[in-house]
Image 1 (spheres, rainbow, N blue to C red):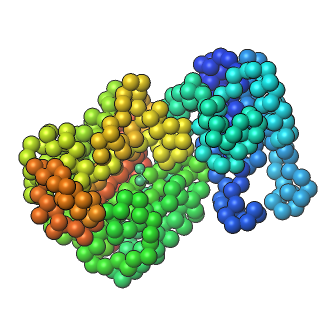
Image 2 (cartoon, protein in one colour):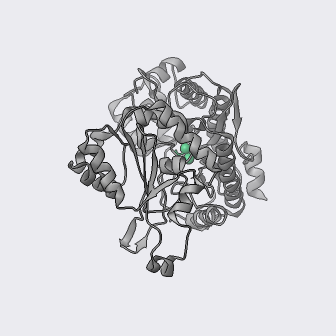
Image 3 (cartoon, rainbow, N blue to C red):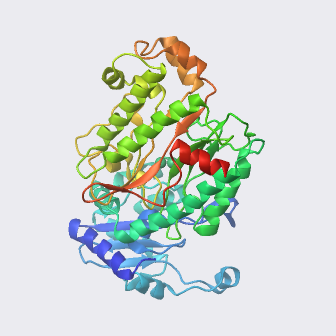
Length: 462
Ligand code: GLY
Ligand code: MN
Ligand code: MN
């Protein structure tokens, strides 16, 4: 955990910005896999970690905005707990470590919430994602579980987003620790991949590295010769000469900060000429997008720039045609690049997404597009110093999508369907890095992972 002053100051900021009522912070509980005592690895709620630092189940916290009181609710370990799980610090000591002087037994949370509710006080909660938390809040607030979200406070949500979005130096150092793990994961994958191996031979190896060096992966690893399936978690294929791998993976530092990197590389260690052409297009879109990053720049504009580069290069290859600006405005490029350029990253790999994608990624008044492709842009807002964002363009040949669009004649003035059909089976290419918005411009975080064609071929062949 960070120095306790950091948590004190974070909570003080909340108290300064929000004046009335009580703020509730439910911590996460253990989550059973198949029977109650066989649990998934515990993952604390990220907002709870941000304000209260304590990384264990069975805790809730609250701030009374009118009195200024801060309380953590939780129990000291019982003798049974100590026998099965070992001893820990007392709740009082845990509170002191994060600058909180008042701790109460876990079951006092119920009385605290009920009293606030009975007195008609404003109760602020954030949007919740775990069924057990939603159910217990429903019970405490005396509403059906489907109504819990009526208590979600936009004021509270916006303030949390404002604070968590701008990363401090300590947080950036944590992200760079996760990226150091990513570096090791990618070097392992580049060097070990061989024709004839199973995808899971490599996917399992890199997940092991994430566990050796930190808290494991920050999301389920995408490792596939079918990169055209954007979030492909299937790892059963045998890798062959000529196949391209998309490896999109991340690690968590010990303090749960994420990394999120993608590289695409040839199983044989050498790109074919066609693979080089498509790879170069994605690489140009990625590197040119990164160069545009600076405070005040809208990420939507950078997404559109990446889209234009992709469309332009696909025209050079003969897969697209017509006026590039018109093609991008119409959304024709989304046949190949159907997702957004990136998202915020921090304690969550898609940072704060549970608080509301549009509140995180869009500014007041900025509407999310409903155009296929652009609609998936998670981050559109103006960039600010301290934001950590991903830049991850891609080009994919998705058989079902090509078949549907061709049948509909969709954007046929911009797409050479006959040539595109010959690309089916190519797979996909995505390249992703994590970038800090600095006061003046940007800094690509982490030790550079091979990315140019020459670098990738060299590391794969070593
Ligand atoms: N790992 C999914 C993504 O890159 O957003
Ligand atoms: Mn990723
Ligand atoms: Mn990402």
